[in-house]
Amino acid sequence: MVLLAAVAGGVVTALVSLALGTSSGGSGPGYAWIPVLVLVVLVAAVGLRGIRRMTGPMDNLIQAARRIERGDYSASVPEYGPPEMRSVARAFNAMSARLKLTDEQRRSFLADVAHELRTPLSIIRGQAEGIADGVYPADAAHIEPILDATRGLEVLVEDLRTLVLTDAGSLVLNREPVDPTVLVHDVLASFKGQSEAAEVNLAGDLDYGVPMVEVDPARMRSAIANVISNAIRHTPPGGSVRVGVQSAGDLVVISVADTGEGIPAQLLPRVFERFVKAPTSTGSGLGLAIVHDIVTAHGGSVEIDSTQGVGTTVRMTLHAEPIASD
Image (cartoon, rainbow, N blue to C red; front, side, top):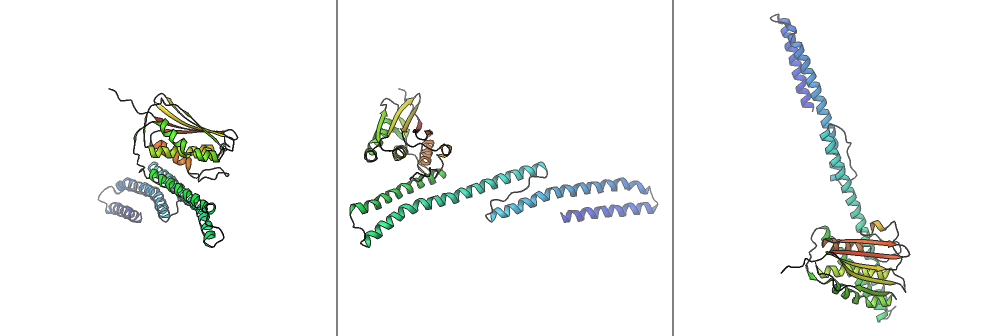
């Protein structure tokens, strides 16, 4: 900018000298250069003003970009100047806001993971040290908490792995034609012991005439199990959990309805977000996020209805496999 100003100043000075020289030489109308001189001065002034209007916003962008490079994602720039510069400033501020939100989510995610890992690790260490020191006998009653905490860690690690694969777009689905009713029946059978221990009536409302679905059976089994496990855990003794499989046109709906405590109204819109859970929940807060990721990866959808004190219903909807024509 300084260079351009110097060049403009030099041009103006030369023109002034030329104009004065012409007027003093007496060889022609000396005042003929005055309009040209005025025009050049005006053009130079307008040009310098335009340069200042451009360089100001550019300087702001450069400084803000350097702050982001240092890890300060709160950096933003004023949205002023020519229309093009305002558009660039708006885009920059939107990018900065997204980076700030992503960084906050990353920090929150790591803190939540650390918290979820701390509890089972504390149980394992406490029980193991007690047995090693002779405080507890090495019997089934004192080893079982270690096994339970280990299984909890395995589930958490697998959930985190699924989330990472989903975020990276690398969640591999080994699809094959599957009878959804048989799949749900098998999952129900695996929860018989847990439901009896919790004194919760677990029953199926299964339609064996529904069409096949093309899914990854292991992934879908995990999603269904996650919902049933949540339902049993949040249903008091004497309550019930009903699991249904029905067809609706070219869709198959797998539903899990419980008579449990329900989800607080303020949490309901966010239940599919990671680590979102009620204060009384003993889970990791990843279950429904995993279910959502798995079902949507299959091209399906998940809906949830809940009323505190009445119960919760989760519906997983999948597309039926097209019937092959002869």
